[in-house]
Length: 239
Image (cartoon, rainbow, N blue to C red; front, side):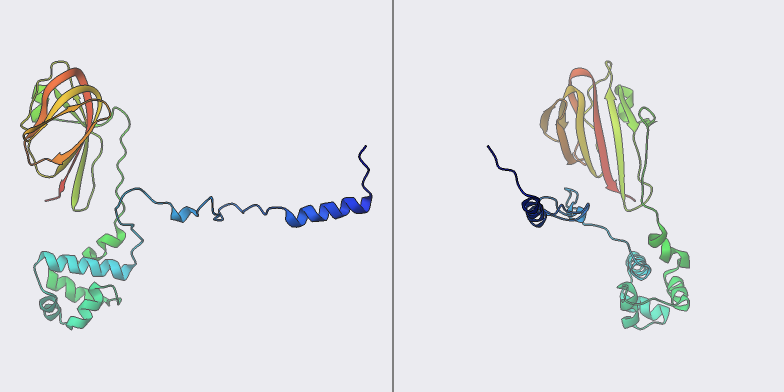
């Protein structure tokens, strides 16, 4: 029969449990099992983007405008009445240029002063399209039963990205002479097709993907199972 503990022994045991109890981590605090939230990142190799301060934003814009005119830093500095050292500081975001300096640079670059603030004030692109509400696009392939639904568009920047949902209907015909600038990514959603790129053929079914240089002739060569749908993302530099 187990012996009963005295009140003194009960208090001693309670005190011992308090001393050895595991301290629960506070919400948001990093532990060996749960790294802090700021350590999580996308699987992409794209560099992270931080918030630009005004000086860095102006400097990048000045350099970009100068390079577009194929001016050297020395040439621009002379035309704007600045020293090469001062222009270097401005382009590197190391100083806050005065309004008179910005005015002189704007005249030398033949742009309005507001152009220096374009990157700083520019909003990040986001295009949202509800199911079935993409813009139907007329292209060469639509004559052969290839239907293009544009799912979004880029609003600014040096790169254009065009995501399409492409449907090949029952009366669609093969067409392998698509050819354009940029890169293209295709992800098969339904149906089956033999897709040609240059001199190679690729059997594609749901879940298969193809990423290629779109300057080579390409397109569906054999429509194995119709109708079929696939996602096509075309990427090319903005002219």
